[in-house]
Picture 1 (cartoon, helix red, strand yellow):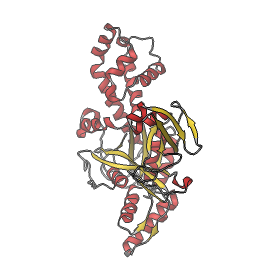
Picture 2 (tube, rainbow, N blue to C red):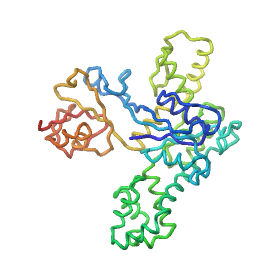
Picture 3 (spheres, rainbow, N blue to C red):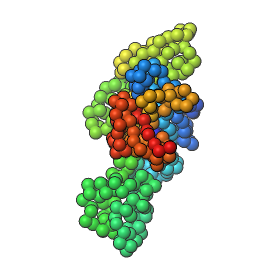
Picture 4 (cartoon, rainbow, N blue to C red):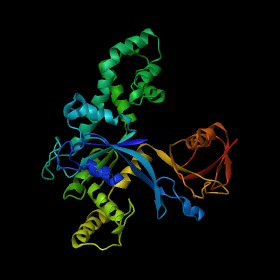
Length: 397
């Protein structure tokens, strides 16, 4: 799974990425500070199951603090897009192609209205950030449409000549942008095109299918960044009302970055996603003032900086994944003594057999049964798993 961080230049996109990953990336107040995409590891957080078993977990990857488990997810920060990116403006095609590997997108916008359509700084309030939401969706739609239109005439004629099933033909041709038979079949039926041969589709038909495929294969959450700037909160409320069908989360990436770096250097105790921190080091006057500003104007007002909430919502609400822990009824530790060392992310609706294959192909191939460790209940391979389940796999060794 890869999460893409996207948006216009100079909206705090790279700051968001750095706050999420603590990677060293270039952050600058001008367009195209990011040219090549940055790859890093962020973390989705959830309440750990260890307290239910009166143990302390020892994660093999990720970490656990105060019984909050942080599970790694791959993230990519793509250079800022500009209007006309699908036509190649601002190296747009290269940047869009970098996003092709992403399973979901975090669209960072400057909710203070302090960045124009070119990514140039303005006085906050001078620009309407609702235009950014529409702009990015339109660019992504045009990107998919261009991919479809480039080959459609020849492809559709050949598919009809070969008497190939429409769903299978489209899936095979456009698998590179995430097309699957299930998705394509749903789109075709939803658009009322199941009775039309492919070479009878109008340009408008093709465009609608391409746009819908983009919406499904590149689901998006909007990070309303710079929420701590004066007037930003009112704009945020307006956007929530204007775009009721989108997931929009208020955030301050700059605040989150400051808190995580202060925690990393031992000045404070801060758990990402929490609504407060504890001072434990010697702060200078400037540091104390800055952290107190974050506490009063961000943490107390919004219940957190929003960065961790954006990541969590992307995984659990947008992509609809669940977290499942491997464990044994009689033993929660692995051969090295690490307790509950692993936590896996799986799509909602995954079965016990899917989980076995996720752990290791041999477990899937030799699957006999599974056990719900909490309930001490034996379940079969078709058993649907739930978020935060602890499951033991029994196999034919």
